[in-house]
Every structure is written in structure tokens, then in C-alpha cells.
Image (cartoon, rainbow, N blue to C red; front, side, top):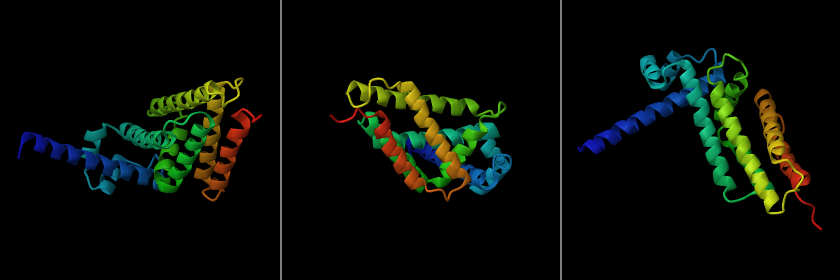
Length: 207
């Protein structure tokens, strides 16, 4: 076996263990909450030792930051794939579509990420900077799509792109909070309403 093949095999083993540990952390966060999601429990659930979990992530805070960033990266990939080259209202509506599909496909991942996001308001939360970084990037992307919509004459020129982006993000976060507390709320109907209101609030009226 060549050195490159051996290295690739080790890299694959590392990637697999990281994936299994992350999945274990997600399920434990959803089942038990942050306080009861320990490195030892993650190791036991994933089939590895606590020592390997600690070696891989350094600490519980490091592991939680990794979980948040991993799910956030999947979210960003879903959004970028679905938005594609779209701009303006269409881009924002596709963000809504991507988020609703994320709820359908990976509800546990989304619950774990938002558990960490809402817990980051604690001044002592060591993963708080990770959440803030993702929030800023999300608002920048939204504002860019809104500005492009204004440039193309689709979105009303008086719309403040940054404020509109912050409002959009706040509405989505609020809806996800309510869904996390009560999964029985009519999520699909609410997302359809958000999609419709994006057009009403931002789009230049047809002549």
C-alpha cells in the first residue's frame, strides 16, 4: 500500500469518527440538553472513548462549537444550492424553501443548532462567537440579494437592505424558536405566508 493510500485511509477513518461523534452530540443535545451532553456520553453513544473525543475537539465547548458550525455549514450549503443565481425576492423565497426543507429532512440537526444558538445569549457561552459569526454572514448574504434586487429594479428603491435583512432573519429565527418549543405549529402554512409577504413588502408593483 502506498503512503498516499495509507494517509487517505487514515483521513477517512478520522472523518468517519468525527461524523459519528457529531451525530451522537446532536442526538444527545436534543434528548438531554446542553448540561447533560458530556464528552463521556458522546464517546459512549458514538462508540469511541472519552479520551478520543477530548483529543479531537479539546473540550466540551470545542465540541459544541463544532456541532453548531457543522450544522450551520450544511444550512449554508443548502441555501446556496437552492438560491443559485437568483436575486431579490426570488432568492429570499428560496431561502425560506431551503429552511422548510431542512426542517423536514433534518429536524434533529436544526433543533440542536438552535438550542446552541439560543443558549449563546448567555455571556459565559464559549461558542457564542461562532453563533455571532454565522449570524453576520447570513445577514450579509440576505442584504446582498436584496441590493441586487434593487439594482435589477425588482425591489423597491427605498428599502434599506441591511434593515430588511435583519428583519427577515429575525422572523425566521422567531418562527424556528416557536417550532422548537411546539412542533405542532403549522410550519408549512407559516412559511408560505412568509414567502407571500416578501413579495408584498419588497417587490416593485406591476404597472
